[in-house]
Length: 311
Image 1: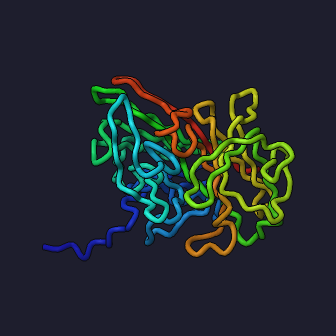
Image 2: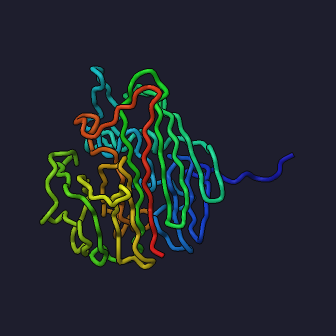
Image 3: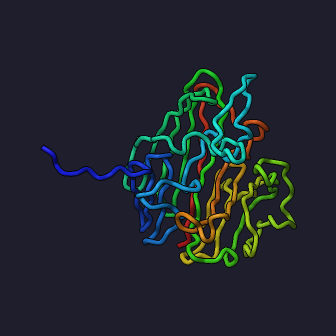
């Protein structure tokens, strides 16, 4: 006997909600990422509705490489690999292999949730990684810890990135302030957005080491040589927001970060936001080797980043 019609499945899969002190975070099965982060009903992150799929990388995890990989091709230990081109207009493989994969619930409490996924070998990728991401709400905000463990038999190349957007609501980009502790910025070629060289930020349009108004500056820019506090964290702060400043931070596992303002005003999907992306390596690290991690069998890599909200 039927108990009635089932609820329709959601494009982002199962939803898990955690709460603490007026903050609420919803993480999702598809990609294991963050769909929404609010405080008192006000958006902290620019997320997406429950009935939609993630667009523009909103809240997603970028594993096992962040950003772009030239031609989808790379070599590891003398063996060549070729990935599907997920950014075909620029002939790149983009943002890893888990954005649309199903993650499972490993543990949940009222203010924390841990999701897991096993990344299997597939065309262009030959390794086995067990992935785990734990989301915890604290008095400070949200803390995110991701661990990748090599459960295969050969060492695996690895990079991680996260793609949260700080919600800016209807505030014009020019009226926002930004602090980015990047001593160097990455120049990319304009056609394919692949690395050319790093340059000192000081005295350039990319110098946000001291808080200043965005003005007419548009960013889709990676930064490194990051200034850190005594706790080992770098911090990027977006100011001028209706609910107060929002800070994205990363620990020493993240020597790179990316700031993207292309969805800060008149976003064609979802709400307006500035992406602040913690990254373990720069674009195309599978080819350059720069800050590329190689995880031996049985070994693991862990990194933690988070979002602090003004009180």
